[in-house]
Length: 448
Image (cartoon, rainbow, N blue to C red; front, top):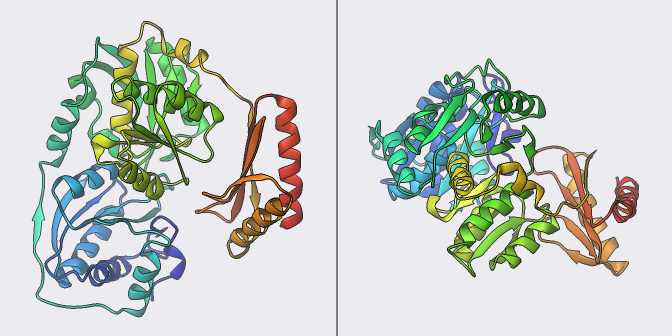
């Protein structure tokens, strides 16, 4: 019996050997084939470095093939390479065996079709029902092909789209994750002198957890200072998210990184769309407009940003959390490509990384998470939205409810991954920020 709770907002995820087993993986393969009407469908499958990846991938492929799908196994890769290869090879879909930044004992499946990601509201409910009810469709077994050339093809593709004005020195921490497969060789081929921390692929993640936490970034910052590097980058376990550190060892906010990359693209693509999400700073929209771009607002999450990227034919997009999206990578987020584009941007500047960051406007921001059961969090936010509407506030309801006034905003949204309600606020000064957060926190507490 498959545990229902492993079917989440953006993917399927659980603890290996507890609620995610080889039997579960095989059933999910069969369910996805039935979801696609899969006989003869061509699919890409890959995995990250986790120790449970190989047995789960093998079982998943067995289920897909038994249901008539033709599978191309690309082995251990980053999640962005799985997305890239699914479109690049013109397949009908792809499945990445990964739990992203979760601890090593976790694993899961990120699922993509030609119509987009399978997620909540976009097919996940149907896939879940097929899997739990075991409404599988058997047919003539499909075939299996092993692809060992994808890393080389991806590197060649990327290098054709990167050109530095001069060489740079960078400290990179793939954290023993999937980006280790590309570090340092891809960067050195792009004329970046690399100092690599924790560069050996290891699914136990012995150096630190597969998430760029504050502790991880502090270690990276010390290495950047020691090596007198131009920049530093920390990657998450499967390579779809990165955080930058400047040459002074300071963490660069997602807002600042987004603005710099937007500036880089808008230099040659005036008037084009740049996608950002509801929790980004006011400075992001202001910068996109001042640089000659067209700001496009999206919900938080790779599913929604990718969809906006394709709909708006955007050249670039980003999230506060460190996910960056590119037309060059078919609208998907790719941390490796993002770090190379940031290096390309820095190589064209006559200022240091820190000087560029310091030249940007910074508005005071605040964030807090409130515990709220999964079965109540969405209803609570909907009720708050109605309450604020009745009070006459200016609202945005793209993702949760965002209350906007002349000097700032606050955003209240249900977490898609945890039993929490998230509050983010920003204002042009501390006094207005306190006013906004007091109002928001009081209303959230009352509603919970």
